[in-house]
Amino acid sequence: MDDKVVTVDDQIVAELTIPENVAKELLLVSNSFSLETALEKLIELAKEEGGRLDLSSKNVVTTVLHLCQSLSSISYRYLLLLSLKVLRNLCAGEIRNQNEFLQQRGVEIVVDVIMSVGLTPDPDCMIIRVGLQLLGNYSVGGGERQCDVWYQLFPHKFLKIARVRNQEICDPLCMVIYTCCDGTDGLLTDICSEKGLPILIEILRTASAVGLKDVWLKLLLSKLCIEGSYISSFFFKLHSYPSVENNGVVTHVVDQFVIEQSYLLSTLSEILNERVEHIVVSHDFARSIFGILKSASGVVDFSIRGKSDLPVGSAPIDVLGYSLTILRDICASDHLSSSKEESSKDVVDVLVSSGLIEFLLNLLWDLEPPTTIRKAMKQDQIKEGTISSSFRCCPYQGFRRDIVAILGNCAYRRRHVQDEIRDKNGILLLLQQCVIDEDNPFLREWGIWCVRNLLEGNAENQGAITDLELQGTVDVPELVRLGLRVEVDPVTRRTKLVNSS
Image 1 (cartoon, rainbow, N blue to C red):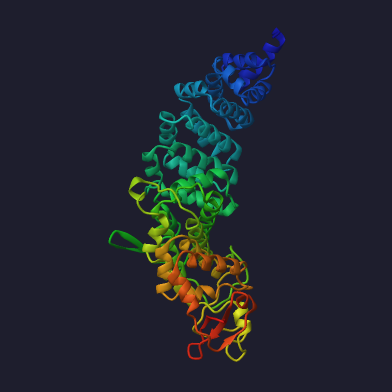
Image 2 (tube, helix red, strand yellow):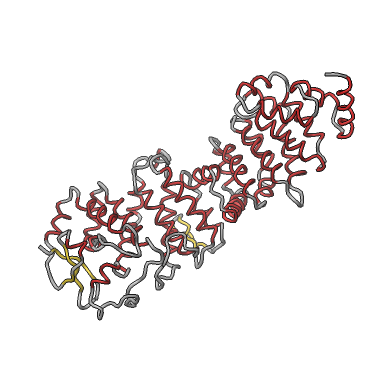
């Protein structure tokens, strides 16, 4: 490197108050003639595993950290951003760079950059984003690195960052929290404590506002809510309500829900749907979702027939619906237990013993008949578009289908569930669901699946259908093909199915 270039660089160094040795080391290691070019080259070199390994022997982490300390002025944000990108890439899976970062108190330096330069009245979201990505890459190393990051940020600095309503910040923030808590139960307890819950609440508010459902948010929510035991406290903290405790079970008195709560459930529903065969579902999570379902069913107005599928834009209805879809997927397969204490009891059996079957059958009994059956009835009995005051409407399209799906999944190869449905006179009710319903797409398919599971290996249930008596009926083509007809009780105006053979 010739004298002329060094002289020019000396002038730049003096201007930025950068130690001369810092700038020269970066120029030398990157074979560059300007600081900006040097950083850009290092970013590219550190993207490759071999590049990170090579740079780990040249003390680049230490040099760039010194540069970050010299670029504390807001005027030099771009150089600072490039410096953070270099460190982020260097710490991605390279243990020697992570160790150097630890020894040089890198977390303290980077957190200071985030708080002093990133979190200004006009936040620099890219500075915050890249800084968080760097801390996430570093904390993946585990052990003291996780605690190093955690105790620099928890709880107050995490909270300040979480309050920035920006999608570019929210997901890497989730990454940092997740990687810190992964495998460290103490930190997991921290984030779900009274000090930590406000951080999660702000994250959910941001995610809901910007429509974020990226991977790190999902991983964090899965660990805390589905695999952990924190869904109830988290869910109800999103909107404060009075609560009562009975035998150690906290019941929240709810007269309304908010959009963040429905957003949380919709995200959890997506997670389960995507990973249903692999995810570990805790018993606490299953019981809590059932409790939320019961709360929502007491809030929703069932007098208005829903015209759209989820989400409908009404928080109570969406909470109701996503509770059902979550339970549907929980009951769709045999899940691993999240602890040794839970291993002796299947999560579906936990729900069944909590009264799930009876609750769902009661919801189904109270609904108006499916559209196919309503149209087949005499007009003086039930007029299309109106209902008897004793019947409820589906508050969203798919409500009836989701109830039937849960019952069908629960009945799959579970004799005690098959018997409970028969004992509660649910077989005829579920046979009635084997029809096309304009308000419930795929109801017929789910109904047939449910009935199949009710009858499989259960002679008593098979006999219950054989023993049906034919009385005054109306024809429904879908049922005729199954050898059944719809009967209308002249007193109660309820419908049931009878054998047409």
